[in-house]
Image 1 (cartoon, one colour):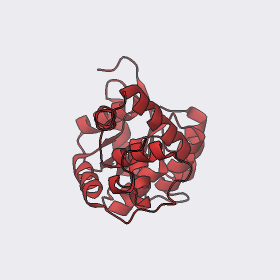
Image 2: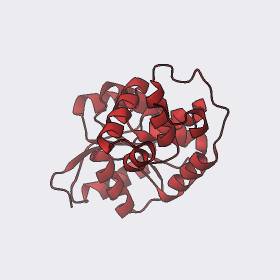
Image 3: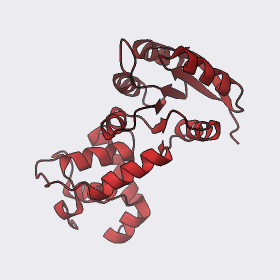
Length: 224
């Protein structure tokens, strides 16, 4: 149970769904609906004005789609968590949302409890994906193997490339620390530097970028 009410902005162009979602969340403990809009442009404007904790974002909308709206919101106010709620479950949509800075992705049809838990997670800075989406992403992370590019992310040090490779493998900070013989604090500092240099908000974004660039453990063995 959370102690403070999370301020949520709803963005969906389907009026019936939007109103139903607003009614459901308004009756949910710990959640305050601060606004509900029907297009991405209005979402950006209202998010920057109201500074909600979480934006519940659809993807296909008029004027400005959810991917572009997410990117603009996160770029201007990185502390706002964007949780995608969409019918789209294809990889292109999921990874585009993550690249744009979304901290979560649920499919429409998710149950009330799942939506509430996801809002809480995103509002507290975590990254969360619905069961079907999480399985799809993990499958992608396990199987995506491209030829490493020596020119990928030249702004990173060799040690940072090693840490990024382990992050791309799905290892957490403690596992990376054990494998590389470092302290967890040192790994955490490396990860923070990597995220800052790559201009990403969280690990999922970094993993997608690393995979698409071909970064893999085979590309960055143990650095001194």
